[in-house]
Length: 510
Image (cartoon, rainbow, N blue to C red; front, top):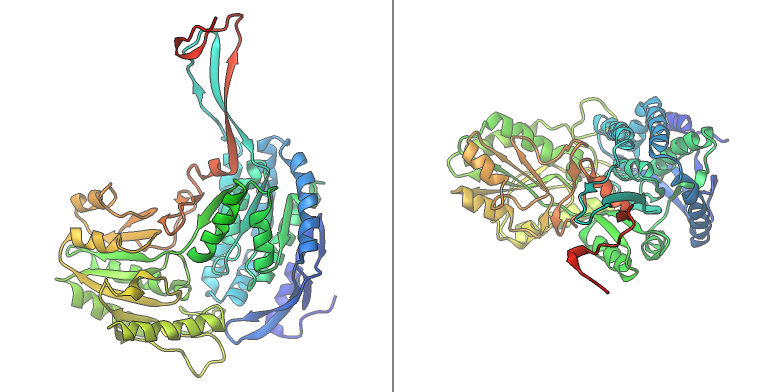
């Protein structure tokens, strides 16, 4: 196998990657007969490696093998499936730093975040192992003598997982770890612009299946674009499709899956707000806003995009925020001390520039930042703070970059109304010490989001809770809590162990 010539790419060989890689893992074999694409480093737009994407022929071959493997996998006891997922977690631990470095190199997030993303999958494996012994249903009292009722949970079959570039492997973990212990096979279509992460992750998972003499088709993976994603959405062999991405594409996926009466699990756009009340710990709030707005270069679905400040502390918070923004180090995400890496693609950079123009045309005032870092070959932009009206049309949209809209409010009621005024409903947070405000915020007339925080950022969720949002965010829930139920089908079973036939509701039929 030909090695990498650039020193900074040589670690990729430890992950089984080469300068040119087949991008389909089909029936336990690597192949690819689609177009050849280049994976680019967002920090300099230079080629890291080439990938041969999947064709529709590769897809069909993979799906046929996966259907056969599913019948084997679903009949293995759940705790035994959990043992396989435990081994996957251990294998990932062994490559934590290499995988984290790859995520940083190919996606563009800073190295601590890249390593943290891989750690999140490892945590999901640990969580799923315990879950494999707790996939229990209810025992329900029957009104009929000598009858019992119970719920039985069975696997769906094949779960399709379509992931986005901003978390090229963590979102797979949220879905695949749970889907596998629930008895499903997984078909993964990774983001088109992070194919090396898709291949490296799949190689690790495949090695565990092979070591345990299990069919490789239990985990099938494709690198590719919209063509493969559309095939997955339309495929009646796939009862559940989990999609992470934009609201526009997610709606199209949902409609296609609905046409065949399949299920879709959607994790779509966020437009998240932090509210800072007049009694807030300002230092805590400023530190939280910095991470929430600037982390991952503003490319998390949970990034803080709107900052709502009580009028009495508005200028104080804004001034402190401007000062910490000035200290943000922009640069190579692999270098120690960097806080802001590049946007993921050159198109993302162009969208940022267009977004700033739209902000200005709608009355937005640039307080700091507002431009691209022109002297760089990479996709670097400045972290930006904007004063703007909450009613400006641009505020209702998700500009995927480090742009923070700052606005003023007078009352809690007004702040909650602004928080809830956008189409999206993913994450939200309030900074206050008053219990009456906290419990109103998390209650029925408070935030309408799926994630409702107090005194912490909007981003950086733990895996133990269900992750997802409402409204145009799609309504899906992944990771912890009872999210596992979406990956199984529930049967209500009534068993008559007597010799009589009493009917429910006291009906006498002949």
